[in-house]
Length: 402
Image (cartoon, rainbow, N blue to C red; front, side, top):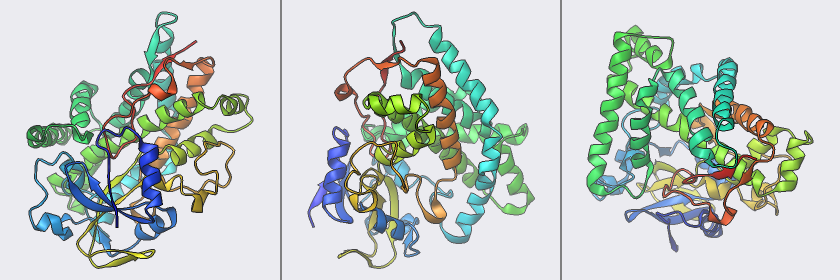
């Protein structure tokens, strides 16, 4: 099996995803830092594996980890071994840790956040409208980033004063370019910051999910301090990064497909279609790390060996022609049906999917209603991916508001 090396600089994600699909449903890959694993790259096989009980999240099953081959200063260690949370456990422990989060993020409860999201969106658009006419704007920094960070922070009870430090630490956390010597301190700093937030909520609880997690642990749900801290970190990280990428990728797609942009602005196609097609065609999450095989698992004509690690390559899955037909490589907001799994599948599907969809569903139409003549300020070919193998993220999105 030919091994495909994932580019740590993410210079050609589309080409890399095509090579992964061409390698078959199970591809042998090398992660940045020289770490070997496997990737599932086809839709049908991914659905099957995401519900396969022989794949677990316990890093101690990983043969390379047992043999001491994974250094603690590996730049992606925080994604492979982020501490005990619903991201790293299975079965009853997973249900226990996930239940409280899932209850807070049901579609009904998320819908109750709409008014607040609309107000934050309006405030962001007002700030954009106040900028000097003709000035180039980084839409990611000025619009796509503040909205989800403010929403998830309010939901979790995180003070806005912590946002700059969170941004700094998360950029190091996700990046493949973080110097190895800085990784242990970065991980310690993240833990210290979230521990401080949890301690503050324990002293002064509020109407937020962090306070609810603390209260549940005291009422008999037996969440440890480590589980609360790690769950808070997980929700904050996933709760803003995915939505940033979704909004940015949707705008980039519409700006490079003017006829489809016209269709949605004229009301011929609903914004929901734009969101779902963006999730499929240019998914916010390119690869998800990591699950481990407790026994040999057949995947198509290949075998994922016992003790090996598996990543889910969502960037490859979204353009699988076996699932989406011969036009899988095309952006098409009229696509129907559009059955993607950009938020995962099975018991570990992202609990924040409804919130991310709602934020994008408020932000995108409001942006184009206020600035219908918005244009990219640079050629689309000059938009650059950040060196993050898990998030499909741009450095910036320069636009002219019109």
